[in-house]
Length: 176
Image (tube, rainbow, N blue to C red):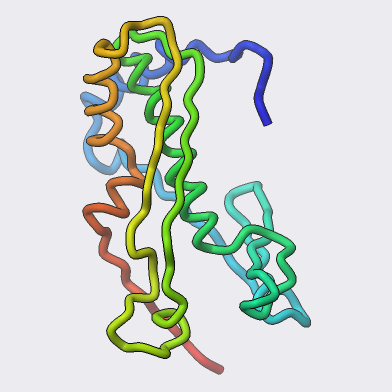
């Protein structure tokens, strides 16, 4: 789905104002907390209703993994999060660097060996073996003008950072 109307927000001005405000802010003032809630849909095996702020969506698995395929599965959402974050980070950093970007296209894919997920082989990890990211930036600038942009995206994309540098995860599970 492509938005054919011009953006209503001047991204360059917004980023400049926000960056200026954050440069004098302390850690607490500059920190935004995001969260989601997940609930198993009643009467289903793998259908999960997600609430993220004011947004709601469904995550499910394909029939081969016990689901009804009514939504993308969790690892597809992980790939989608990385793809979207790459696109947004390109646009933000292009604005910061004063580069014109007409479009950004990102494709991601990766193999998951289900023996790890299902516990068939303890030596096989349950997640992706790797993720391949192909990003194409379209715009009027010469290709070499985008080199710094690409470095900035790789250094500042939050989802890429979480996947490559890792993030501590503290889990609390209760039963009953």
